[in-house]
Image (cartoon, rainbow, N blue to C red; front, side, top):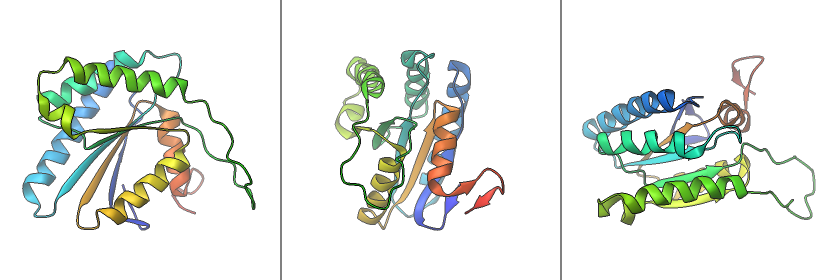
Length: 182
């Protein structure tokens, strides 16, 4: 998905939320990313954006993602664990609400354990892992990243929850009624 506001960012969104579906989806993303990387003279970055509902076990979803990354020689440059929440828009926001990121912290701990168990130093040294409380924070971070790396193409893989994908589409301004930007 290309978006006019994020010119050097490509979004790959999939509502995969079972071990088999995240495995297949990660293979799909890795194939596209690796192909793009081989064919392009422009430097590329890969980013994982993940969340899952509290009825799912994050290790059951993150392990297949990590395994497929290893199989496809894909190391994410950044990993964001983001709550599928949107900030309420107000004309004046005096204080930022306190968002609970306990669930995303568990996701991060699972991912870090997978990295620590990995014998490849490459994965340990290259990834920046962050927890973000809202999807609005995610888009602000991606916008800044796009500005900081103007000469790169940034590939953002969003997976783990239908709510996450729907929320990202909403923050990007896509309308469910019109199938277009609002």
